[in-house]
Image (cartoon, rainbow, N blue to C red; front, side, top):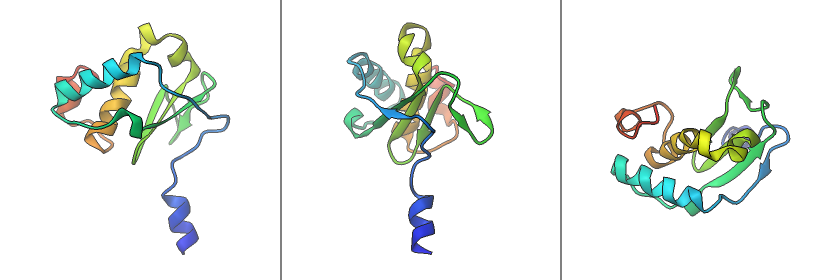
Amino acid sequence: LLLLFTIGCQPFSPQGAQPFDPPATFQGWWDEMQACSGRSGNLSRITWYVVPAGTLWFEGRLRSGLWQAPHTITVTDLILARLDRYSLTVKHEMLHDLVGREGHPLAFATCGVD
């Protein structure tokens, strides 16, 4: 039973996921999400992973980003390659970390990332 509990608490790890350090741009986005949501947190607590484009399947859906409690965010390499175009995906997952849960409370609409 302890083994099942331990496995159940581990973040989903997509095949081929590799850890990465967030680019400096992420700090500005993090600050923006804190300001608009009224929540605070520490960007350095997040563990970041990247997977090859089109391979982030979770719960039967293809995703571009995924937040998992307590502080794990996975994105596809397409997101990292085109941050200018896909910043909303990263900000959306950051906001999940700040609110500390799945779902989309009012803060997501307030911050323009719903």
